[in-house]
Length: 234
Image (tube, rainbow, N blue to C red):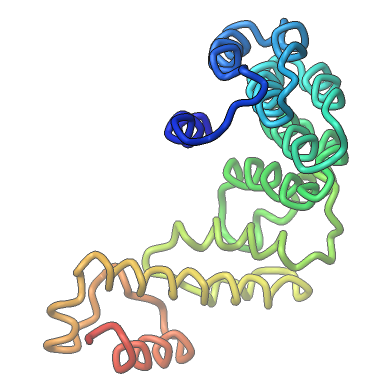
């Protein structure tokens, strides 16, 4: 945002005459986040003040998320304060602060859940207890299919070759999310292979590259053959 602002200062009016103060404040608040209120408060232009508090909250939240949220609450209700709450929660890794993120609350909780999912390792059927703990910690409902898709995308993305049969080890209520995650991963791999120029031999001979190998799975085979005709080899 700062880069964009600097690029526009030559043509954008500055009625408050605070451009220099704004730039100095951003530098100071990044280095001294505990003094953010004193540094940012004199900026009367709303955008400048909001940016200043946002930078300060991000830096301060790494040490004290609740104090960062107190600073966010000095902003007027609206997008700036919601974004500040999101930053305070994410930087401090404190899920309870997501309730202060307004329109970004759901995204906030998903980000914090992703942080926890990244530390889960194992195979489908062995990771659900850890995920249940993470879900409860972050504040999602167990029935929310998105959280399980998030988990299984992380777990299955580490498989080479991809093996959606491993989803058979998953409790029945989450099995569909596991298989759907695997389908999404294979779509991603097809797109990556196409964009990275990895399909020359495949398009010439039909030989499937190791990167796209998978356990016997008719749905993935049909997907690959369909994409071969539609866009992979054109």
